[in-house]
Image (cartoon, rainbow, N blue to C red):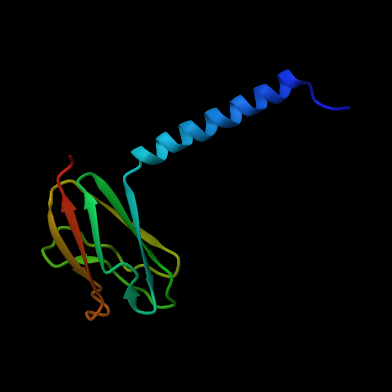
Length: 114
């Protein structure tokens, strides 16, 4: 037994609506990720608009931190597969490092929203 044309049309319309609304939600999601692996920040310099939440995820076997050099933010020690998120509300340059491994450094550049 094959589905009717109206049922196929309804399925296509539903899938299209889900895809369009999912795309809109993703467009509004101002998130960015930085993977921590091999004792380094996978994206050592990241540029984002104000209002963006950046999430760091530790994929190393060793714990790491994400600590602002200007004390704007400070994560706890992150074990394997743990994450830390911070929302950047003001434009500027935010340098950070791992307090456990000070040679691990990174930078988030926050630009004004247009």
